[in-house]
Length: 480
Image (cartoon, rainbow, N blue to C red; front, top):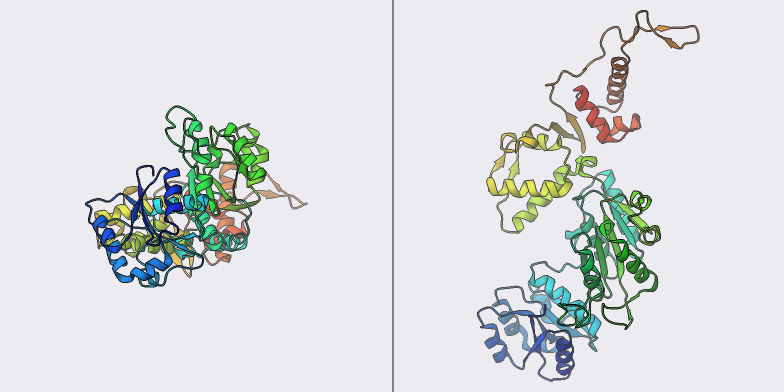
């Protein structure tokens, strides 16, 4: 951000002086523009390094269509930061293709920093969303309906949320959906991957630093807490945070204050915290890798994201949504025939939705605009098994190319029964392993019959997870 410039447009100069002073304090170069002719000349530069255009709502309406057309002529996205006591300028209604960011009057440094962080995100190609279903985790299965219900219940409150789940299950998307449904939706959503930033740099990343605080600190830098002011800070992979940083984060959660590195000035913050991890934090507490007091601070409202293998009913919806998103990005839409869909339904998806998205993108590149058959899938997906969707539930059939037991061998149920009804060993003994397998196969078959062949229903009758039952179906080569 240090090399970026902001065009400050305010013919009346009523707010221009304050805006330029604050921008310079934030190490951003303000470029004053007084009329449309000057704006047109600046826009004609070959590659203008603009972070955004700062303009009052009144001036934007005064300059009107010509102002909009000049901004549209710039090749990269141009965020419009409008000054207003209330809503956006009227001209914004006819220019929804431009990103409009609200900056209240009078200008406050903290809010300006947050808006600039949004502008930087737009410039990097991440669109601003306002209460849009785009961030809603996809799926209509029972597991995802429960997730949606919990999100809708917690979103209106400022309660800390801890999102748990395997990598690739959509934890960040769930966090964004909570933010978009909350009263902070018009404020920044700032994600931080705690596992991707070295431990000695994470403090500066979160809290910022003063000029000269350490070697290489050539200027004052705002931290993510200040960028997220009034909005939501998403701490991804919180389980990878060092114990030293956990202590400092705990203080911020308790006191709602922090200091930049190299400063003794206390800064108050108004930020909602959503954390996420794929790790077992309770096990990490027992191992001494995670603080128990921080866990209870974060775990006010836990939200468990189900793995894709636990909600395979959502696979058709996820495929449709991911293909639609790929098409909106300029790619050619692909389609799947019944055989390909059945093969995808038989996979365990260890990488969850992220793995599915990567596979679809790869197929869209290899077979643009084509119909994908089972033979077009990579071997690991083609040979995983076969799934069939019937009435919204997933039935799983598996290949029969194994020598495992498929039906109870004769004689296994020929054990003698005594007068009390207890089973006794037959003469000559019994193979206990085969005997137990035969009992298990028989009970699974009966459960499937009672559940009309649906795996989920049979799993409920057998008091086991659906994924466990699917594994047993594969082991015994049974068809649902």
